[in-house]
Image 1 (cartoon, rainbow, N blue to C red):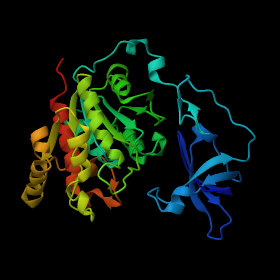
Image 2 (image 1 turned 90 degrees about the vertical axis):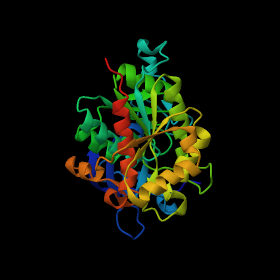
Image 3 (image 1 turned 30 degrees about the vertical axis):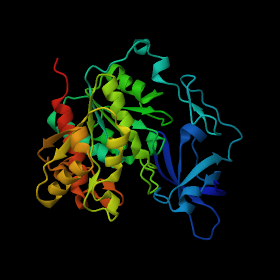
Image 4 (image 1 turned 60 degrees about the horizontal axis):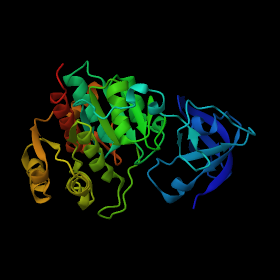
Length: 357
């Protein structure tokens, strides 16, 4: 069940489009505590405002970085801001909002059922998106890169510091939020229409699809939000795109199920993905490459899909070149480079599949 507390905003820490970060005094005796505000849903707050704060995630010790969420601003009696259409996200909750959708405004999409061979990179981890984007940008500086954020984890794209940094550094050109995710340059109802929006409205050369921050897992074979990678790849194939899967592979994760090729990747690509897709394999050499190759064979992925060998791009150095500071599962990228070489390899394969002409 959710937990709510009331407090007073004592400091604005940061403001950017779609997001405020603040300190709130909840009268707990522990001093000000951190919270974020989604102005699209509740309106903005100011110093001194009394607010209702959802404290559930912090109390459960979840991976929110220790942030509460402002649920309502008691300084106002009402809040209203008309949206651009009639498509509502967060439907049937008290925070449902009419964000509209690109589909209801663009006649061009009425009969679209193809993405014209556009490469579609599908990753399970939000932190892998920059590696794929960097590889594409460095190989093809003029490519239009569109990031599609699913609703498999965090719903507001404004919460993603990575997306903010990538936009600031010119690594992605447009964004689409799909399902109940919201706040992108374009809103879409489904993965199918989101891919169509990316190709035909945003004019993307490459689409990178991944959930926002906060992947969900349960330590069971099927109970994790990364299973969405399979249907994403299937949708890309069904629409005539070029589906490219990103391996989730680690040699720093202390959990045995994520060492080598994670069971998340093995399960999603073995059970949830019904089309044959490309799996880029970075040639990292040594024992790590041997383990990756072994896992591809023992999991059956080498038989079900097409493994494409890719020389490593030196992604850690490229992150530094682009002034990106990437952290995944609490570890800096340099502590787990193979995880990001896998995503960069997908970027390399995608560039090679961009249709000519």
